[in-house]
Length: 348
Ligand SMILES: [Zn+2]
Ligand SMILES: [Zn+2]
Ligand SMILES: [Zn+2]
Image 1 (cartoon, protein in one colour):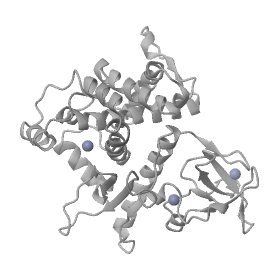
Image 2 (cartoon, helix red, strand yellow; image 1 turned 180 degrees about the horizontal axis):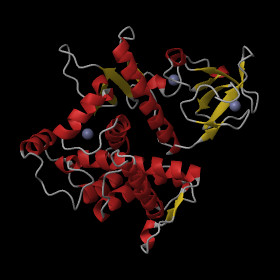
Image 3 (cartoon, helix red, strand yellow; image 1 turned 120 degrees about the vertical axis):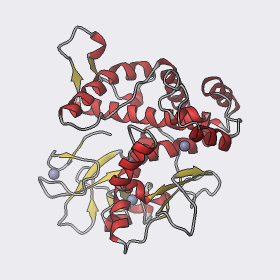
């Protein structure tokens, strides 16, 4: 994610801002322009301060869960990100409402990133076959749905947005890192496996050579994984223990981490971050001088990102909080990420 600025007064804006703290102009994100735009709040029609185009806010602005803009002439109620919602929680329940807000922050960041990667995403309302839907549900005796993906429908349980639940799951599942954005990135990885790999024999052959044969019984593989109490020797070949359960999970986990790295690399580039530690080790010096989404060679991105991630982890430790990126990317994982990066570049 980039850092943005108000195009009326140049004050810095976060992606989620719907108002400029300095000049009071309304602000919102335009996916068409991949930028934040500013609007004079004293004028009834939202005319962008930059180029006088007309916009309206997504209908979910009313609940303060979306600041995306829709070009006026489109005549749509919901923005491209909110059109993906099929089920949202009952808004009269205050607790669920707060959790939904957190889910929307993560979802909008995900959709921004899909857009940066030029990945196609469209609501199932518009494309029943290949579209995508999100169901945000609370756990209930009336259904047995869990956080997961099935045929273009991504379910995220609302309790994932509960910090107590997150901490409990971290220790139960031996996961050092469990976040909402991580869930979104993982589950959408399963969706794009269906879209990009399953439908293309060349990519499928290459996938199997790198990740293994996904035709082995998925349910049995997960059962074995949970029964073996996660003792498999995974550290040399996988990004996480869970990735070792089945090639599909390896793909989704690696995909999520690829998106983590790209997102951090873009932020670093946007801030002009560079690190030059007081050490002899040159591998820990780095600067991201290029937009990672426009860079063909993933090795370059990784090499420049690694020292910055190391510095961010060190900063977090100074504050007594967990590492931002508590993982080791070994050469086997790097190979998998290169495959994903190449695949996405090929599609452009
Ligand atoms: Zn401003
Ligand atoms: Zn929206
Ligand atoms: Zn999965």
